[in-house]
Length: 314
Image 1: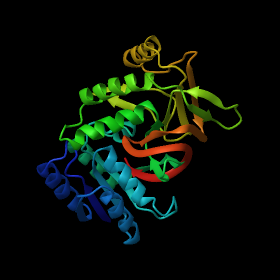
Image 2: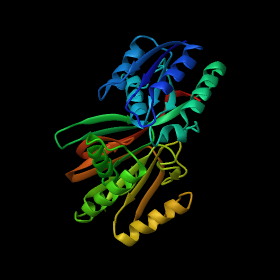
Image 3: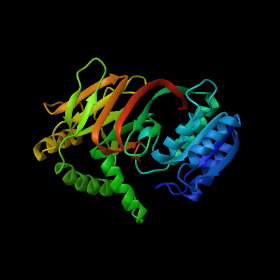
């Protein structure tokens, strides 16, 4: 088996020593090549090249952003038969995709699980989400593995990325601070999103729209945040959209999500599970994020569920 190990050396929990241990362990079972990323999109380019060169597996070692890039590189030509299998060894701060797959979030334990999967030939097909957006001067076409969204969550990601560009390390506290800042900004704006789900009337006056490809939606430290608990890699997308962002409304949902295993409900909440397609539009440009990566602004975005798009070693 030929495998390509794609390492993001800038990821939060990735170290040279950990990379060397992982590479040594994998090289004992497969014919291994290694790429260390040094620019945005490098992991996607390396994974796309691995498809052309006939590799059997591409292993992503980094955070969720690295996994997302590798997935988009593997699927650059579409979800077609014969693509390399994906392997994941977490190295970021959240590692949502790995957690949703039931993989260990510790890199050493995850390496052992990956070696076991290679030895025994165990894998599973996973469904993915696909984003197609337009407007605001840029078009985006991107696969996502666990979540995407427009509005508040994308503004939070934008704030965190701005702080990381200044040298700050990503952490739960940094995300909380960015969320508070973005919340104050959101409250000053009129609700502008319209959510369209097939066979339902459009829902106007929406403040934010989160789309899940699996459960959980994300992690806050070690706590799983579960917006659509029945969503999984084997079904369609989950939708969580709020019409109001008043302080009592937001605190009620936040308290519920932190204290329980999810399943939120309420009069201001539009929530759907297992849908195949969602369109969100806005008269003004809004931020869009996928898997915690800011894509930029758009005025229209479509989210599509693609069943069985990728094979993952588990």
